[in-house]
Length: 264
Image (tube, rainbow, N blue to C red; front, side):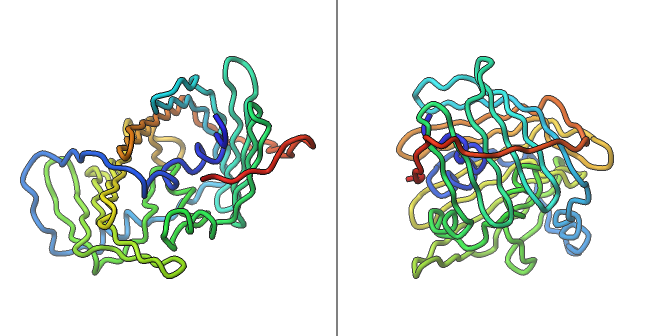
């Protein structure tokens, strides 16, 4: 359970370069789209809400017993992501992400972490992870840098498929990583699935966003599923049970007797 808060807040980010899984391609015949402007404008639209509170149940399967957690996730658009987690009626940890970095502590091992986004980029050997990409990932919005000339868009019965026409290259501390990317969108431009493959290490991540629902003036996924296969298979499920737009307090302070640790 060690380092649980950071793992949950950045699970997709931390695991995306260390996983392998199968891809479920949309059924039907893909047809290339001649005019892509509308599609790319839609999938890159910025969020315009002020604050959002999400009640969520988090389940993790990784070969060891981890109880289902009840999480409260509070997002102030462009400012912070705050998370509080409870297991069996006990508060087990808390975390907060801001444009400056990520902090979190967990009560089982009495440990805490502090990390800026350059540390996450170092872990991932990429250079695009920042607060904005983390917030977009949680909300089911496009979180990978998209340059139209690097992707091919096709249309099928289920919606749209976006595939990288060449490997995306990221350099961190002199180390170069290459990824192929495939993303599926519904006919309403909701993100349905992301598949990210490390071409040099045979690592792969699949994220599925399911059961989209309207809340005020935006669309949000009620279910997020992450399947990972590397040296072992892991699965993370988030069931978002309630959305609210009310403002709330986000206290965060590390108890004095906690020990600072690092994610490895």
